[in-house]
Image 1 (spheres, one colour):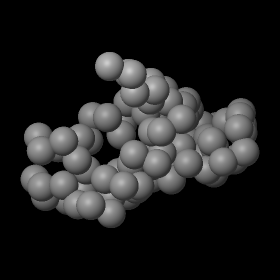
Image 2 (cartoon, helix red, strand yellow):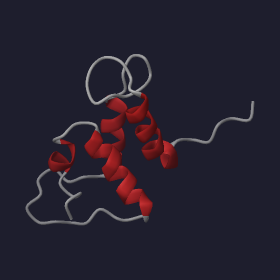
Image 3 (cartoon, one colour):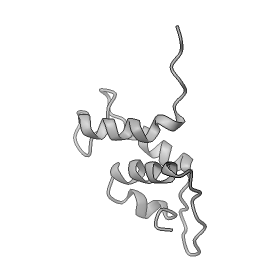
Image 4 (cartoon, helix red, strand yellow):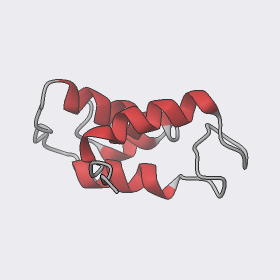
Length: 89
């Protein structure tokens, strides 16, 4: 239920949507419907929020203009189930 409110999920920055997406995908869970939530979380909102935080150098970081290897790795793990498979060419 705590993942149902998108505003609460993203208040801390990029960590929120990364870990929310990983948590939901860990067991193929649905986002619960919770009364009183005005900005409901969706998988697409989580994905979009993560992609919008991508830095110019191609990675992600908690802050700053340059990618951090740890945050980028966590991000790729979160996005892995939604990324298209690599092409064979």
